[in-house]
Length: 215
Ligand code: ADP
Ligand code: NI
Image (cartoon, rainbow, N blue to C red; front, top):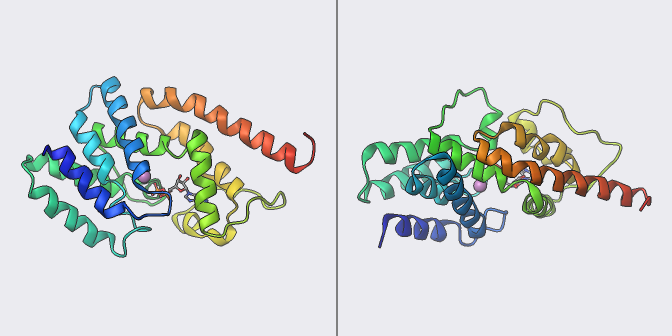
């Protein structure tokens, strides 16, 4: 079996039962988008797909202890026939690429493959799939759908981001999802985001009009 197949199987086994919006279909989409972006941007196809499959295996929302999970991934990767520099880059990428990380003071410098996987992951949070995932996540965490009297929070901190008591599903678009387009690393990803941004803006416009019984 190829290294990528082994990595994919490892991730599937770890996340197969996830119901928080990080199920295996998310990993498959991120891997596919990352491969496409890597072809456009001239990055290593194995490295971006490997990181795509592994990126949520250490997520703090999914595993009890993400430090231990990272060590488990490290030991697994060291058991494969891979150069140490590649393993190190994969581990750094998955440990530092999350949106939540951008809300901390920690300085992060991802490699080109890391930037591509981050873009692919963020693209999966916007557009029609992004709308679906936000509603799914919000429903699962008992968020209010919408409250016109509650304005979106500005300059979200890491703690705010994880504090769902003050969150509404519609505010999540203003607090995070509509901002993603300007935070992407590569121009190939920015091109995809332009259309997805319009899908979200049209959805929000329609949602609010229906809420006010205007349409
Ligand atoms: P990251 O791990 O990159 O910080 P998350 O794992 O928090 O990102 O997000 C996973 C998915 O859940 C994304 O599609 C995201 O938009 C959605 N999500 C995260 N927080 C909320 C929230 N408070 N309300 C609705 N959707 C959310
Ligand atoms: Ni992800």
